[in-house]
Amino acid sequence: TYSIYGMSSPSLNSRCEVCPDAKYMGTTQCTANAVEDKAKYSEKKILDDFYLSTGGPNWISAINWTDSGVGVCDYEGIKCKEGSHEDGGVTDINLAEMALSGSIPSSIWNLPHLQVLNIAHNPVDPNFKYIGDAKKLKVLNVAGTNPNVLDGLENTPSSLIELYLESLDLEGTIPEVLWTLSQLRVLRMDFNHFTGTLSNNISKLKKLHEFGCSANDLTGTIPSGIGKLSKLKVSFYKD
Picture 1: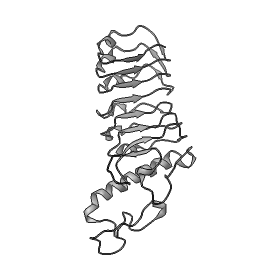
Picture 2 (picture 1 turned 45 degrees about the vertical axis):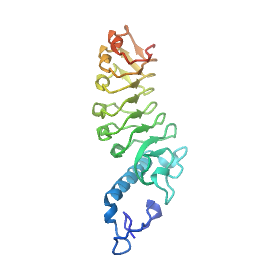
Picture 3 (picture 1 turned 180 degrees about the vertical axis):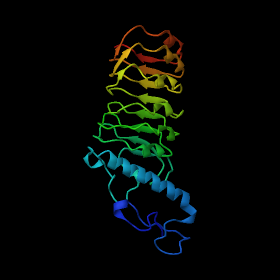
């Protein structure tokens, strides 16, 4: 038998698996599955770090997150790609309104299959520094969280198509970096404290389907560049 930890451990959610190539009990890898084991270990460790860094014991609900012998794909709020092993292939993290706190560890962006991260309406500080490592990320919802800054969004992967930044208490002019994310289809920044005018650089977001910046302190007129956004179906510009 083998285990990535070399032993069965309830506290680590680790159990010994059958390995035809193992020469002794307690080996740390099975030759045929070495690559899969590495991914399994890294994804579990990333989620365990996420749980601890965001006050997991105080979440409103965390079904299976601390239960021994349960794969990460059975953790509450976690979805894995179809056909993946129960301990890997995480694609979606949906933990909105779960009372997460503290800071999101930057390792979360290392989940190789992550497509959706929804941590909306939690008093937690998201960290965008290494967001570029999430090569498959499509949806990022950090509405109602407590980011210190938006630094790092300039490294957003080209796969990201939906970005939700509502209710973040952001002030000043709208960050120019947002107009560089040309792949976006949805951009929401309602209920902040943005001032100044809406930049005509919004015209660079040619794939935009939905845009919202209502309930801010913007002034001036709607920029002419919005008229160039042929795919824009829904707009919430009104203050």
